[in-house]
Length: 314
Length: 314
Image 1 (cartoon, rainbow over the protein chains, first blue to last red):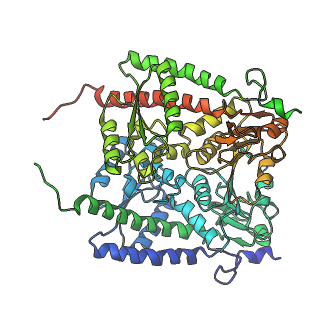
Image 2 (cartoon, rainbow over the protein chains, first blue to last red):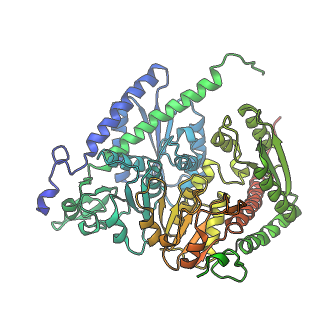
Image 3 (cartoon, rainbow over the protein chains, first blue to last red):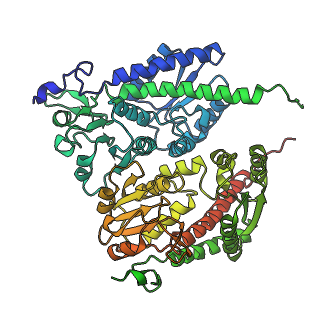
């Protein structure tokens, strides 16, 4: 048991670590083929990113999205707006993108300044162009066991669990964190797969009682070291969705998840590294949604226009 | 401990039994006031019920809805269609009702014949007229902690729990049954209230392990005697949403829930009778949704037409 070397282990050779980059590449291979087919049929996928008052971490994230989109043959149009943009201006922008046939996907980057109502703006994105899977009807579809465009981080986290080979029907899963964009969608996705799911949060009386009985724990709270090795069951899977910037003893900034990696490494059967875990998979799932959204628009268009038996009235 | 008399106890005097009719009447009082205000403002609520190939139990249910609507001043228009109606005809009917300003609410009665796609037809109801709360965006709104029009049975079941006075934040709740229209929405509603929720179902390995640790158990599966007294924690609340017709030893048909009432009565702190439990509350919640839908349509109309500063172009 060596806590200092655990971090240095390589997911490619250490089979306890779930290799996010490997899972991501597997998804991208499939997406590349779908994009190629769409382009052949004159459906060039084009993703428009809307960022308001973006700070450097958000810009870094967007540049990374562009890099992956470029590789996959997806056009990527990143637009930056000043913090002074109004709700009405942003709504009109989204509506114009909805109506633009060259735009097949729209991302509203987080965070938005406080004066802009995130949920209302998200709901203004046409459900068939909602590649982040954040429209209420996209979320409702998951509840209906009908995954059309799922929230990217949640889908990515579930993909990480699936990559362990654990059998989901009947699996005892505890999700720590009940956010709308991560915790709850993970819970619904897992329910659709037949897992027995408990959702815990800051009001849960005794988190350890739940986390210790789980075959798999998902954590998405934003608190470093919230989950420690003594809180999980030996041999269980730990999917860490937290991304926290902390300072180590030497004063260097580093990125860690919500789990105490070293103590959990000793107990878990599988765990995700941070960084290099759920993060890279999320971007791949976004691009998978871009392909799916373009396919849905293509099918919708073909249903509307593909049948020749109609009359045009002026 | 007498199992033969437990059934005869009256919710009005037996404080272990949660009085569905009492909860229902409390909701109806509020609804009646809202309906009166809507009518004064020339917004007469009007509910259209669409039933296809309805058998006698469904007709009984619809007659009961009419009775409650009549009492509350809601116009009720029940339409019955032959089993031969096509998907296209029913879709066109729904779209015409969406476009009719005199119709403020639409119910698509269950069950539909197999050739009609329930979810697609449900999604065709305008979200502001979806008084059953079954549109994917209605379901998604609950996930967003934004209860606009909630699924009636789920909302009713949660109202039953609230009537016990138990404090929901941190409460350990187990929901048995993961259906889209009952089990899952109950789970999201309870998560929004701060409860720690586990959803169990037919793939759950050991239901009793979960049900015995819960402060409150909801059961909505459709299996008589699925939950017995030895499966629940002493003093806990048991909300039974099952409605099953069985034959007793004398060959008489009677309606029972999913819990074995007599053995659970001895252990639970509170439990719902069946019939007379969640059922009557569900109809009241439907009428509450009718009032809410009409209010939302009124507000929407006033926003569109209430500002005089516009130009009409031909």
